[in-house]
Image (cartoon, rainbow, N blue to C red; front, side, top):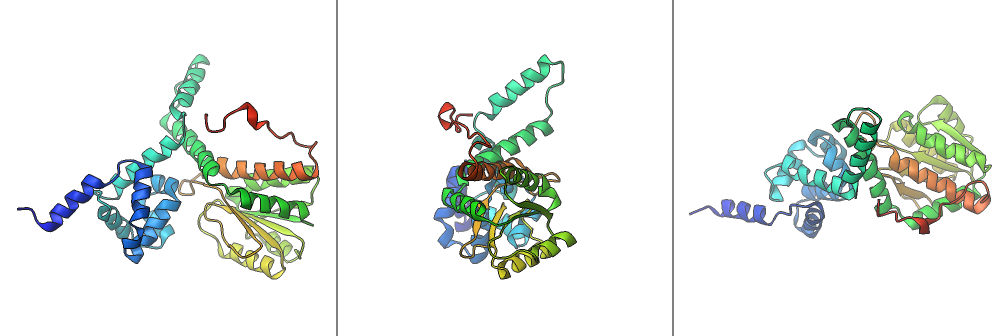
Length: 302
């Protein structure tokens, strides 16, 4: 006769969802029944499904603030053999979100073949998939209320200070260029640099500081710059995979990036700052940039 524990494990496996929407719902439904540590893991998994699909367990554990074994035990508690089996569901969900991905890649392969090039490698396909997923996540999670607040702050700003690390410099440079062309007084700074620290001390009330973060880990230098900006009564717009702070009067915009890879995905953050620039142009200098006619295409149809 099987033991109660074995019977319980079998029951869990038989009811464990095999698709990402089901898994996320199953996790959310059981949240209140989980231990505090498992709740911490569950909430992170629900909010960062793309990262869970791609990151090694040790990297995830560092971001969540738990031991890697906690993640393994959590996966088993949810009815899976271990984290690798659970991660496969997150990976499948990540690719499924990129609607029409296979047909797009097939067309790309055909175009390359027509030009006499070799078929795209798995590495190239993975990069394309990650960037498409980043855009799909932005489409699903972008808060229109926060976006509207960010646009109003940028329109009213005396000076816009765009602060980003080296990995996000392309994103910051694009936003700075768009605002400068409007024209707005926008200044690009490298986070944590001596010039950035000095410039932030010159900021004052009426200025807006846009912090662009590609990594989940916020440096001590950036934290110090945020503290200086808050003391100067500047308004903050924070863009990143885990945007903080959320103090009153400040804006946070989530832009999904795969910060676990040597080269993070940039499609989401770049598109987000491009939207910001276009919206500011629409309010201040509509002839400068032509807004797309949304009636001409279906953004979800790929």
